[in-house]
Structure formats: C-alpha cells, structure tokens
Length: 383
Image 1 (cartoon, rainbow, N blue to C red):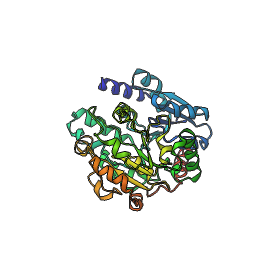
Image 2: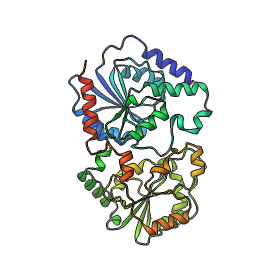
Image 3: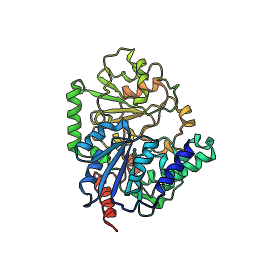
Image 4: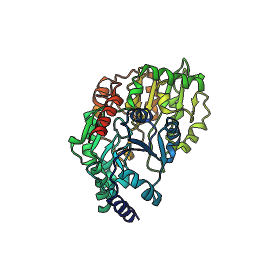
C-alpha cells in the first residue's frame, strides 16, 4: 500500500499543469508555532496565499489561526489527501514542515519550490532518523523512502550548530542546508510580557500554585506500550512538603496516571486543560527525561533547577536511542532511581544553564521569528 500511495502522489504531482507558484503551505502536526505562522501571514506579499494543513489533533491551534483569517484545512494520509492537497502543494512556492511527513518522499520536487523543515523541538536528547537504532532493522525500501523524504528538504531552521549537526547525522544531509536563525517558538520564553500573561493564565485556573514551589513532572513520549512509571514515584516527587507537584504526561501516556492518582496525595495535581508551555512559566523545578521541554525551560527566568529522571535509560537507549554525547552537555547528571529523585527534590540544588544554553539555544535571542519570517518573505518576493 505504501508503494502504491507514493506512486500515486508522484504521478499526480508530476503532472505538468501546476504552473502558478502563488501559495505558501505550512504543514502542522504540532501547535507550538502559531505566533510564527501569524507573523508570516501578516507579511505575505500581495497575491500570495498562506494555507495551513493541519493534523486533526492540532485543531485548537488551527481554529485560532482561522480566526486570524488564515486558511486552514485538516488532513490525513489517504486518497483525499492525494487528490485534494497534492495539487495544493504543487502550487506552492514555499512549503514549511514542522515534522517528518512520509508523503514528501513521493512528491515531485520542482526547483521553483522551496521545502523547509522548521521541526518541533529546539534540541534533541533522543535520537531519530538514521541515528535511531531501530532504523537499521527496517527494509531497504523503507530506508530509501526515509532518505527520499530527508532529501526533499532544502533548508533546516535551527537555533544552534549542535542541532544542525544532529540533522546532519540523523538525516545524512549536508550542513550547507542548515540555517542558523533560531527557533521561532523560543521567542515567547524570552518575552517578559508572554511570561506574565502565561503566569496569569495558570494562576487563574490553578490559584493554589501561587507562592509555592512548583515541581513540574513532564516526561517524554514512549514508543513502547509496556511503559510503566516506577513504584514510589509519587512519594519521591512530593518529597518537599512545601511544594506542589504538577504531573503532565504525554497525551498518549495519560492512562499511566492511574498509579500516581491512586496515591491520593493532595499536593500532586493534574491539569490536562493547561498547556505545558504555560506551566513552564510557573515551575521552579522541572523533572523530565529525554524530552525537548528541557531546552525551553532553560530559557525562563523562573527556572531554578532541572532533574533528568531516566529510570528506563537502558531500554530507551535501545529504542529510540539517546544522543551519544548527552553526558557531556546535560546541565545536571541523570538519575535513575526513585531514591535519587527524592533526594534531588529535597536538596533543590540550583542548576546552571549557561553552558547548556550556549550549546543549544545559541541563536535564540528573542528575535528568531523576525529572522525566519524575513528570510522567507524575501524568498517569496524573489522571481
């Protein structure tokens, strides 16, 4: 089916009828670049049209964009996508992607169209692409398909040479494609106005967090279904009697909350309706593992300490893998047991993020959105 699907995309996109390049298409599977999309829409050249194709689970962000006057359309892979949206993509002068999209491998990439990867994370602790250990076990067809998608990208927007090198090794691409412009979403974390508004949103919904030490537990997604939170986690997280713990699991892992809820500790809270980005603005301590949320939190002035609780590190190194040099640049050494976690919570040692940010947030200075928008508006105005 994959072969037939990609063949059909190639056949449709190869038709010599798509002559006008008067569109910009943003492919959205994450909801964290809304402000960037709005800025881009405001500065579009006359007669150019911006269309956002979004995965259904980002509908809230798409609704916000639609209210702003931007054309939005939900999409999934299938025949409807081939016949409705491949022609749209072929009429684009610029395509911006926030993720890996398999259908790109079948798209005929004309020189007059630029395809840009803006990604959905500012840095990388876990591996992906060719660096993922499971990729070696895939079929030759799959491997060729993966590389075809990677090769479709003309440019990769990153905030650091470190992230650029991750793409070079993970996608087998040349560093010549890397654009050191900064990660647009990072601007909000450096904006005092956004910080204040985010805190106000949180305190309106959860006033109990005000004037408390807030410990945010935000682990990353696990690809395996047998994932279990370790026994004793709740007691370890709540070791500071004067703190409130906010547990924010990935939506796919939400059923794993049961074990934590059963403890019944009133100082452990769950706020599904509150955005992780907003919660970062009120957190004093972030407890995470392999999540890119660490690169966001380190930019905030309220960030006092970060704990990397990697209790399943042996399994995670096998699938999907961890960057080989992670011990050289993590701002604090990882811990693996609930006993260590409990002690780290009690000790509350401040974390120095200077070297971490120099490595990963090099070009995140609050002006990334402007640089990225300016670059591609200039491209759209070119002949």
